[in-house]
Image (cartoon, rainbow, N blue to C red; front, side, top):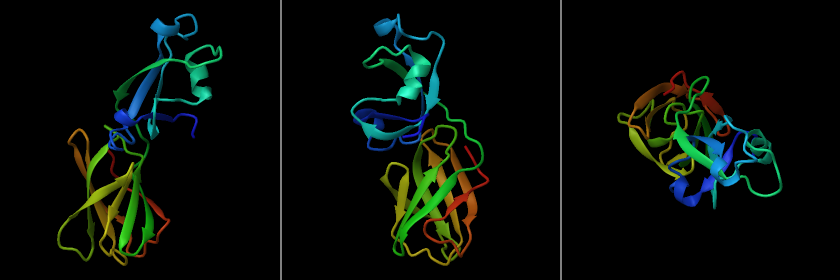
Length: 179
């Protein structure tokens, strides 16, 4: 687990639709006022679904004076700030293409993805596999690839020719576009 990431409840995770959204957390001063560091907060994306929103101890130390036990937190969804363009990592093999979409700014959450290969006439809607991974059952090898992404707030961007026609599985590519 990274230093500025957290896990969240299954209900909040919303069957992975909330993956990559950003949340601001603070120590719950009503519950443990004597231990909270007033005026401090941390903004981060969740990385996985768990039973509660959890943060590593290094982060808890930034919010409260640690005194054995759980540091209760309050949270709220906020916009994501990202440097650079959206990143796409290509995984899987041949007729099962898996794309990890990361570094998403703005709402931080992708709700729809379409792909267009250089040999395709139309955009193909692809489906969420899990978390920030999206899948296509089309054979896309040997084609340069473009992506159309819709954020959970309805904003859409198109990243043209993100990957060249000689892309390989395991490679990552950055677009010049960002929400």
